[in-house]
Image (cartoon, rainbow, N blue to C red; front, side, top):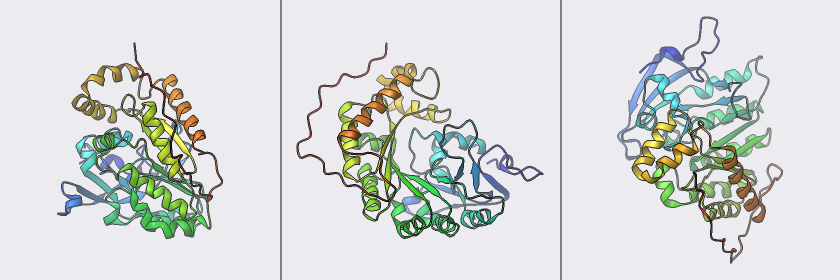
Length: 345
């Protein structure tokens, strides 16, 4: 494994890669327990934990904290897969099973937040790999991270597919009393068969929506990132309706759709999965993503419009932070019109 390109330069400035590792302090562990069988953990003492998002990024935030690298959620479409190639690891199975753990993340964050050079900017978490993936159950890095942010009244947000976030509910409530806290749960679809094949290491979509329900019940507003909407597999109008309806019933404060994007690293792994499970769709994907990592604008706009219309129908809309809403779904939802599947010429 290659660590030397993930250090700092002599002036102390970060290398271009987002994570900074001490190459002289790597401990590799495996655990012979059912939940961690086949997974290798590389414990690292990070040199920096607050990372600046590249200026060319589409992300609506400037700073991130990522205590892990690699993810046992094993989502076949994960855009972060490319980062494993920087360590001479493959972006497929290695990304799912070779997990880098920044064991000093809480202490390092606390020191960086106390620095006079830090001005209390918003910090986003879970934007690269999930900070509440399975490893967090053993390493317990997030309680220390949230406590540091709380103690410095530093605004932050968390995006997760993990139910383990509820373990830290009390800390989140304490933090929300002194600073802005934003929580989003990722649920792109509720189709159980699709979930089992594309997100095999994640909690089921209904369990994630239980997280939304619990957070809102405790006064912590929680939105849903409806991502990814997967073309030809999760974009049927009836599927979109079922997903938005379930999101509304969970009490989510908002729903934001995001169509699947396939960056290098993720693209190759996803297309290999598609060839195995849905070979008849390979050519359609090659045409849809012929121009790059993102689906065409017309397709993205279509999905966004459909989801927003459904959200309005089910009563999801902008709310003030900390104001949970509960939606009672109608007993007899209107039957959807016979849909027409998208055809690419």
